Image (tube, rainbow, N blue to C red):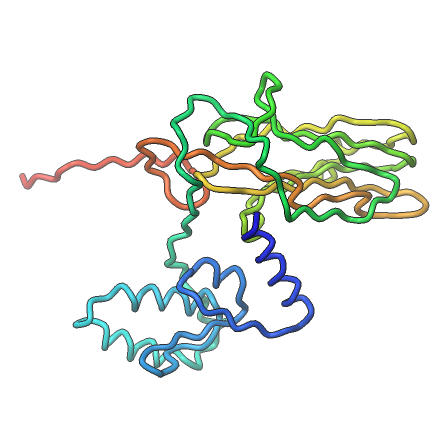
Length: 272
């Protein structure tokens, strides 16, 4: 949660037009935060340009043995001045996700009462209130420590003090750095829109989600859109509404953030 607050603060400073000098070996963080990156080596600027392009070349260079680094160093130097629109960066980085502290191997997901979002941000309300935000198992048990690959229900209650038309409900899953991973919204599908919500009505909103994320910490947003004579757009939105953990698993082969259930195999090739 503290990481999320820090990244949110950096984004606020960026939005005001300030320049931030961020020095790091964290490749994915540089890509997420920086519009421009500079690769330095022995006092020389090897590359100055698009963050993803520079990071990919850094990864290429830093993992070489010393005996092979000089030619690559010279090649990277020659890249300065390339038209980045015509020569996009190649993503060569390992998108890793820090695992949560070690916990006992649990066969079931569970609720950690003290796991609360401290970076929660609420949009101004326009006669609509989102409340009772939670994740539950299929049998209704509240949880915030989940097992990857299982299906859970993300739900919240929406209360309408005013009448709203063309109502849409939404959710988004984000990393601690604030990167959107995916979500859903009913206002994109005409058949899923609520044509009208009367003043005084309440609705239970539920999203059945297959949690295919690898171990780590993630955040959830919730939002309600619509229109009436006084307002159009978000009637209430909660950013970082709740925080959850995906529990570590034994003998896992998946890497990165998303678990694509890739099944590795190999066999020896023998000459005939």
